[in-house]
Image: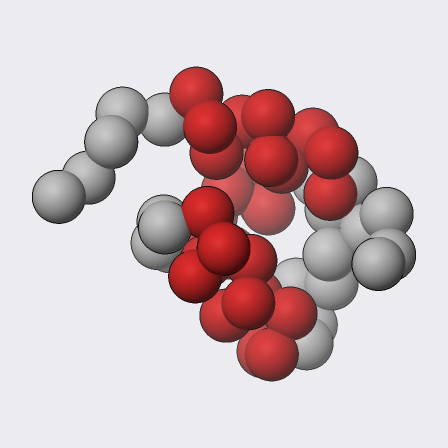
Length: 50
């Protein structure tokens, strides 16, 4: 698994969104960069959406 998630690759963005249960991932990436560990940490800190 790569240590980065590419905002330019739809399948990577979609996979990350499903994996973390969030949308819109591109906004998250714009605000936090493409480092996968940082994105996971930020996504986990988001309020749960049901």
